[in-house]
Length: 84
Image (cartoon, rainbow, N blue to C red; front, side, top):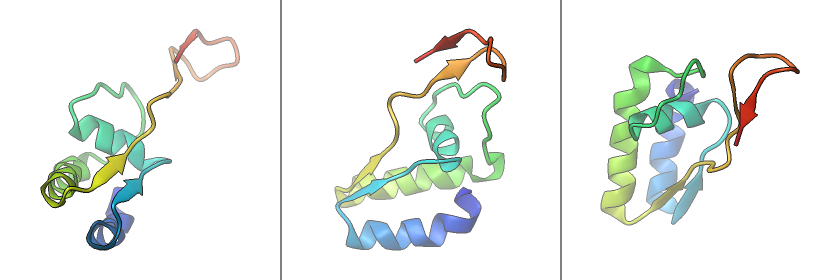
């Protein structure tokens, strides 16, 4: 969750050249970048915060790394149609 980790992310940007974001936070950051995330979990109240974190990283010359190989499906089912 972005809401519980935002202070850690902010501190990491001051100390690290690259920060890797995974798990449930990914979709909030992808939405902040303008990507469609369908029904994936997004902390709507923190999309703007994610935008600010991304902007800060860019300003500091830091890199935030998000997954690039996410599997999408049309249903939460073993028979779902999927795409990478």
